Length: 222
Ligand code: TIU
Image (cartoon, rainbow, N blue to C red; front, side, top):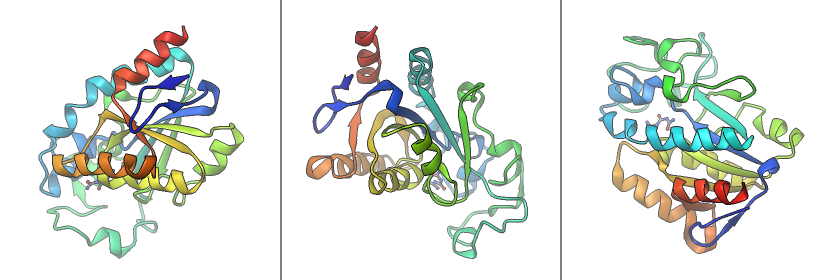
């Protein structure tokens, strides 16, 4: 299969490709969560939910593997170093009690994936303590066991956890594509810059494409 992508077509085999949705959690997308405590306008992120849901549904219908990540720490915060907990100028820090439970702590309501994109049976859910999805998660080994070589990305935020995960993926030998309308930043200029830098220099980190191009690829394969 191939997707009409930037800077050129992206070739993939369905059985060797996973759709990865990064950190589509209440803490980042809904009012009252971590994103808002960092001073951000979370309504920007909510706008990608319909396109992301459509891409997820099409991928599920095609029988593709789905990975969901969550940025979520252990309750004792032993996996959250001061270099992370003390950064920013939030009114609430990671681990503090917020309106949706403890901020970015596994099991808290705010750390759950938003209802519209909730994982279903057979999908993989990874709790990650860092920005990148490979750091301290064992995900690379799991993907290797399943013969995955290609990754399609959506999620939030574009320049933080999504970009870090794509760069980690590139270093580990995966060919990655970011679905342009299934990712968002609290800073539109950062999203635009991230899309540019991913695909610059001949797809130095990976490809980008609108989700319609993925849907067209899946349609034409039927
Ligand atoms: N603050 C911000 O833009 N992002 C994060 O803290 N985590 C993710 O990107 N998931």
